[in-house]
Length: 260
Image 1 (cartoon, rainbow, N blue to C red):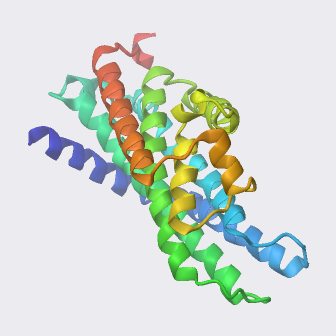
Image 2 (image 1 turned 90 degrees about the vertical axis):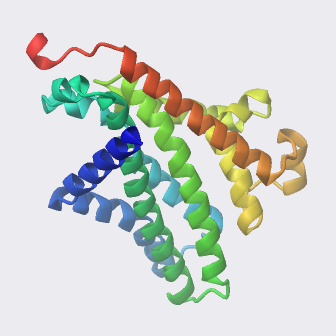
């Protein structure tokens, strides 16, 4: 119970500290990029359709950027701010810091995704030429997928931040390129260990097939699993990454600027 209160106190403190003009502007820029691109495509007369795949791709990019900004510097920001010694000396202070910053990263990255999804669907529906697709069903499906993605990716990036604290964003970006960009496209067992493989299957089940590969061909190459299997895998992976990150941040000795 004390750990829970410490985690929630840390998350609330991070939330209040993030309500600065600079961070609000970052949220606005990230959330505004996908609908701005949709609007440009609408009025440019481009033959590119405003499909679910396009919206998911744009929102996914800004969502990952938000998590890189808020999840990976969980340790380094405290070392740089010279508050690490105080936090490390408190009972369960390291775990509270790790989990509290994780919850804060989930909240802000999901906020970015939710705003971006809502504005993209509004632009697709109400800007000429108007779409006949129902925006509300897609809104709930995309919001649910984004929430699951934020939970999973924030856990991965938070753990990366405990291992490579000084260059966490670089290693986080490398993870995205290698694992989510390359390995997730390999029709082999290794793709099952990526987050994107499970997310795209969940998204396809919740709001219809959107992948450029035909559905039957995709299932033949990558396998046909239930949505429950994908959700269970992501839940286990998220908890495992949080446990690993908690163990690392508890056991590892970080060098502060005053000790160098």
